[in-house]
Each structure stands twice: as C-alpha cells, then as structure tokens.
Length: 124
Image (cartoon, one colour):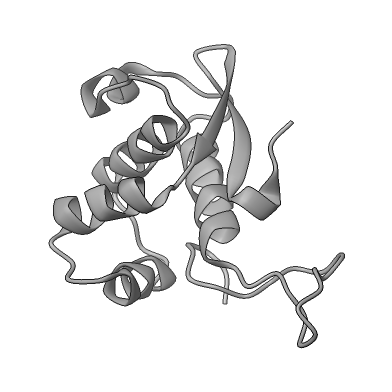
C-alpha cells in the first residue's frame, strides 16, 4: 500500500499495480523536461490545472522512475489505464496532490481527513 506521507500513490497501468513517487530526482527531471527553473515554477505550472497528454506521460513516467521502475516515457505512452484519458488525469492529479500538498497542522502533526489545497490539476 502506498504511503502518502512519503509522497507515494498506487495506480494500475496495463492491468498491473504500480507505486509512483515524485522523488527529488523525479522533480528535477520534470523541471528539466518542462524548462522550469525551480520547484515553485513547476508547482505553479501544475496549479494552473491545464496539462497535455505529453505532460501526463512525463509526470507518470517520472513518478514510476521515482519509485524505482525502469520505464521510459515511450513505454508509458503505450500503457493503458481504466477510464481512458480521465484515468491518466486521475493518476497525475493524485500524484501531484500527494507530492505538493501540505499535510501537517501548525503543531507539525499530520492532518487527518479533508482535502488539502495545492498545485495540481482540477483543484484549488
């Protein structure tokens, strides 16, 4: 089971379960791919809520590689998910939400329940 506190999510791609995680290396990979100078620029890009199919491919690929899978973006482009395009967007939204959401309260304890606002598609 994925550990959200470590930025992990579970997803099913091509009928197989995978764990995805945007590690620091994976985020650096995305900064380079998107031409962003820092993580704030990357987060701002995602917060706009508009992503292309190519963006989904890159984000899912980076998340798989961050979790230790040796999968190219080209291989990701051939993977199928339940729900078609909406399924890909769901994976990306969950991954970005887990990566960029603040999940702690003012005392440093983890918040339970409720959705955290953050830089990911479809949410404010």
